[in-house]
Image 1 (tube, rainbow over the protein chains, first blue to last red):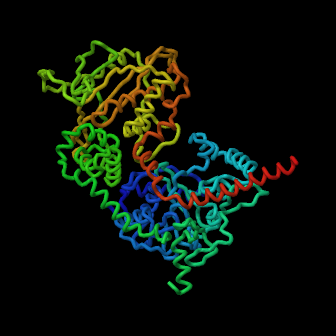
Image 2: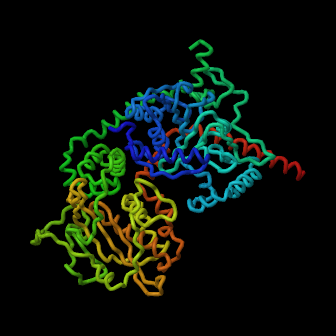
Image 3: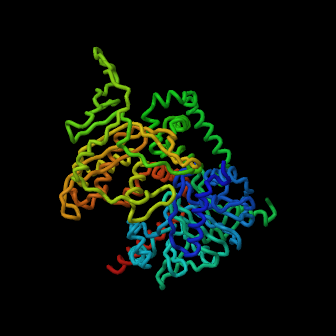
Length: 276
Length: 358
């Protein structure tokens, strides 16, 4: 088996697409997208990005829905490890590459780190313009009026946008971008981030990027505040955190308890308290 | 404790695979040769959708997925990504095919005649055996049967609209095009498309969503030699042969750009014996490139390039559909919060209106 599974031509092509994506923040770059032994829609875009950039000195972390131990994360981590022999970690700060599905880690990312997102739908315009050719033209003209109309209609009907996750963001004042299905809670973390953020969509064959220290703002009317998920009055039942995205878990009696969604963050908090 | 339910993925995967292995282990006992020769149409479907011509690996893939053919194609596609490309073979010409079957619905009398070959088109599909039916195998020649397409005379007489030839065919496995999609790329997408998807879209051209009136001009199944330029001697050498299906269908006529009245054709080609797939492909090809020849409207599903390029791949649609099995509780949690605040907003508004009405 070749190092990092993909053949050298594929890795070269993906790296070139990544470089182009970094050079034009938020712009969607096409690539051929190889088939992997993991199904389409299960993270093949993120995987191809990771496999193209990873080397022996990297330390890899893979999370799915905030957790290192969930089946998809385990599966992807084991696959990458088996074809690269890199060290893996669950600690956000120890990782040089973090591949993620649906979450940005709670702990602030650092310079030199790369966050690789698995992206199901790369083009934020897809909801309002399913025709790819027309959407490309809209991006070229920075014409996001359809998104604004959607936002306006929702706001007038429901007081706010109905979009809960993959909330549209404006990157570097130029491209409207799909931030992958992260909750609104994570959207502000994209802005001015110290780490490089790479987005890979395998089925849709697209790569895009946010370089470190780039301005990323949610699409929002000037007189409306951007509201994220609210966990006021709730705390993690395990580590006591009141500053993290919480999962609602119901016990057999139907009583809700809250736990940190980011399991590494929760473990770190516990360690700090010294009673782990 | 519920919190830990999500962890322990390592063990859960192992157990799940053990269970899967348990219910599929009988398939491992099957012999590759029996599959290749016995389930030949399954093998052909898998090499076609998996876009890798290897009957041996297809047999293994079918065993690994215990007969789930889409899953088996997925194994082949994944394997394909780990193969280094050493070069590109010479373009094959379907007129050079050593035929095992070749029919035309457009012409009664064609050069070389109608060659039914292996087909169960006319079998009475009953699972119980009908008695008193004798089968006599007709004597047949083992000589190579190479006959050019039944459409060739019409083409030679300049009666058929010919689409511009591309200098170099596109390769969708190396770069995926955006609009305008080159025809070579569109045909490749269809050649490796999922049979059912292709059939479904092809079917739309016949009922309700366009009417292209296709007639099968030439349907052929046979073997084609694959030639390759030897890297050292620079000679053309035969590196093997493939079994393939090719279809040329004929549509209706209209005036071309020069004002000449021409017939239109569509082309379908895929690995193995896959008649339904190749026919569907030829109809979609016809529909895409000859919208104004269609009797029905021009804005039909099978004439929409984006629709064809992005929705026919079985491996992709299968993967995406199955990804819904993955947890989505983060997105659902946030959906739920948004829903609750929207509900509160509309309820408050209703209350407010009631207050005003009083």
